[in-house]
Image (cartoon, rainbow, N blue to C red; front, side, top):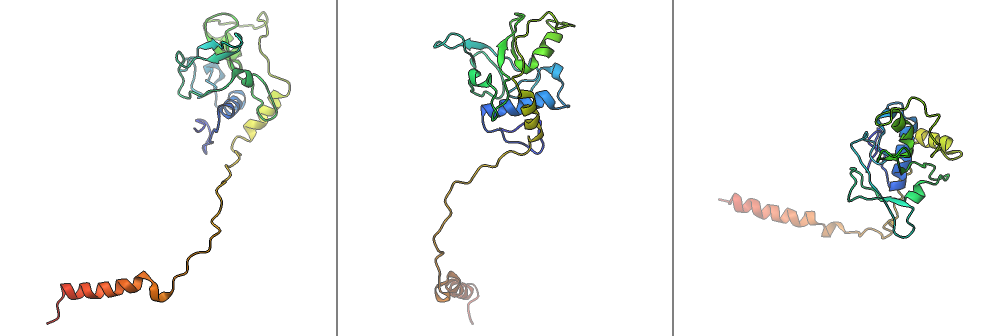
Length: 195
C-alpha cells in the first residue's frame, strides 16, 4: 500500500505506520482541508469512510473497528489501545472514538475540532466543550518531524544470502556454439543441395 498524497510514492508497511504517516499529513500538510475530516487510514474525506466500533469481550472497554459494519478502502487491523499511546517510534495518537456530543458518529481524534465546527454541531466556540482529547506531550514536535521526513522511508533489507559458489567454467572446445556451427552447416545443405 502507498500513500495517496506523497509523490514520489511512499510505501506504507503496516497499520501503525499508516496511522503515523497519514496523521502527519492531517496535522501539517497544507494541501489537506481539515474541514473534510480525512480518514486516517485512506485520507478520503468524511463521510466516504464510516466506522462502527465494538467493545471487545475481554475488557468491555477497549473498542475495535467492527469491519462487518464499517467501510474504508484500507481495511487495516490495528489495536486501538496501541494507537492511543504516543511513543518516540510511533508518536501518533490519532484513533477513533465515539463523538463526545453523542451525534452517533465515530470520529478520528485529529478531526475532533473540525467535527465540532461543522454539521451536525456547527459550534462557533469550543469553550464549553469538555476536553476529551489533546495531543500527548511532545507529540506535535515528533509528528512535525515525521512529516518533514516522510520521503525518507528506510529501505527493506535484502536478507537473501549472496551466491558464494564460483561459476562453472566451460572450455572453448565444449561450448554450444561449436555444436550449432555443425548443425547450421548441415541445415544449409538440406535447403540448398549441391549439384
